[in-house]
Length: 269
Ligand SMILES: [Ca+2]
Ligand SMILES: [Ca+2]
Ligand SMILES: [Ca+2]
Image (cartoon, rainbow, N blue to C red; front, side):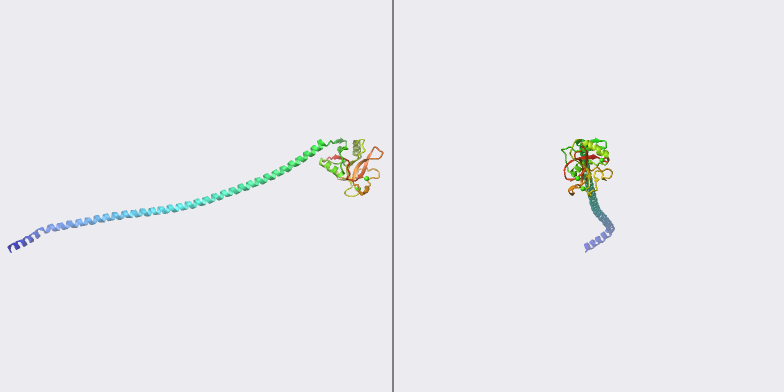
C-alpha cells in the first residue's frame, strides 16, 4: 500500500512538473502543421498556375493555328482569283492577237489582190503600148497617125475594129477631104479594099463613124450608086478603087467579109 501511494504521488508530481513542456510541444506541432499547410498551398497554387499557363499557351497556339489556317485559305482564294484574272487577260490578249492577225491577213490579201489587178492593168497597158509603138508600124500623115494593114493581114470589119482597139487605136474615121486624100495617097498603087469605121449597123442608111462616135455630116465620099445596101446586108464602109480610075471612094459592104483595114490613133487616146 505504501508503494502504491508512493507511485500515485510520483505520477501526480510528474504530471504537474511536465505540463508546461507539453504545452510548448503542442505549439510547435501547430506551427509545423501551419507551415505544412502553407507550403502545400503554395505548391498547389504553383501547380495550378503552370497548368493555367499551359492551357493559355495551348489556346494561344490553337488561335494562332486557326488564324494561320484562315489566312492560308484567304491567300489561296486570293491566288485563285488572281489566276482566274490572269487567265482571262491572257485569253483576251490571245483573242486580240487573233483578231489583229486576221485583220492583217485580210488586208494583206486585199492589198495583194489590188496589186495583182494593178500589175495586170500595167501589163495590159505595156502590151498595148508595145503593140502600138513596136508591133504596129504607124504611118505618120499630115492629118494624124494610122496603121494600114498589109495585104497579108485581112479581117472582117468587126475583127478589124477589135484589133485596132486592142492596140489602143480605132478604125479610121475620115472626117475631111484632107484626111481622105492623105490616106488614098498612102494606099499606093493597090486594088485592095480597106475597112474604115463608117457603119449603119445601128439604123439602116444612118451612117456614122464608130471610131469617134459622130454621124457622117461633114464629109461624104461614097462612090456613085453607093451605099446600096446590096442584098439588104451591107452595113460597113470601106475604101474601094473606082473601076478604071486611079482613085478610091467609099462603098458599103457585108461586114463579115475580110479586107485590109485602117486604124487611126485618135488625139484623145
Ligand atoms: Ca480621122
Ligand atoms: Ca446598110
Ligand atoms: Ca455597097
